[in-house]
Length: 351
Image (cartoon, rainbow, N blue to C red):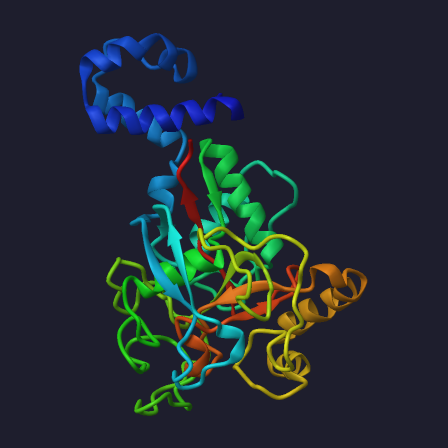
């Protein structure tokens, strides 16, 4: 039986043996491996790797990650972009270091696996989603839940897993493009999962699926990331600001307490209505499980107004195409769970 402290050693050993497939390397590590997993000194590296893998699943195999190159981009939307809001400006240059990002939003299978790992600060419901499916994105998870998920990945691997900053998310979404969507000036329901009753720019009406779809059901962006537009909103690390004035230029998250005020209709990420009362309408039109979650968080919003907004990006199955744009910014209370809130993780380089 292994201890939790041994698991990090297992995972690094698995990766090392897989990468090298070197009997001499294995021989030099035999004593340590034998102590951790009872592996015989005469076993070949491939057998040792298989034995370790069967004991401890590695994060790299659980959550496929994409390498995002270092670079600079212009964050925000230009003033002439259709559907633009003032909260998407001013445009500003951001320069980012390289990092890794999950290829898709976290799936229900991935969530269930990590929900069974050792707790860091809070329990995780292993099956929170309204729309069931192993390869569908997990939803009905709060920002706080997503942070716990990242903390468990970090605890298990010794690496720095976190939610992406808002700048990292938009940089990765655009993947070198400057159009409203990474695939061009408009969007269709053949390219993303959103409410196709609405159109954007010169686009045409499409279908409204009224639910999530399996991740990677649509083409990836130029850097290999799927579902950056639609399907589920994705939590980001930053606290909400109603402007980019004074925003970090290095791609880091905005985490201090200088919170801006959300304009009416932007306080809860939903369809993208710009009229007051959006939060109440979402409660009325969502499932009963979602409505209950919304009600249960209302008191905590009132009791903790200083933490009333965390960033959400990408739009969802429930939203119109305007809010699925690369530059669109949504936000919600960090404790709120709705059936169109999900997330993906990133892994940061370590010194």
